[in-house]
Image 1 (cartoon, rainbow, N blue to C red):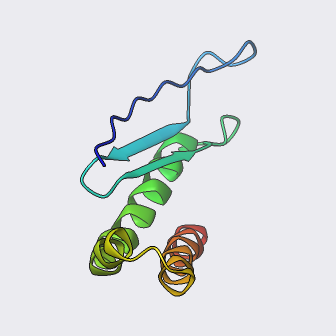
Image 2: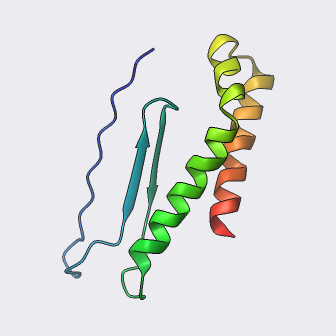
Length: 93
């Protein structure tokens, strides 16, 4: 299955700068949005760093993603969910 990903983010009504960051990797079928903390210095940089950390973990687990694409069993689904969870944990660290 082929996916096409699009992204858009808006600073909202109270901020002049948008610190949100989105990352899309069509090869991995991954779309990540990280909400930057606009009131803090380097909020956008932190959001970008988090998104890239998640992508790195998912990229490292791409063999499991390919396996899941061939066999969508509950066992393989749990493995993919674990990869995503690990990516989020790494980003939070």
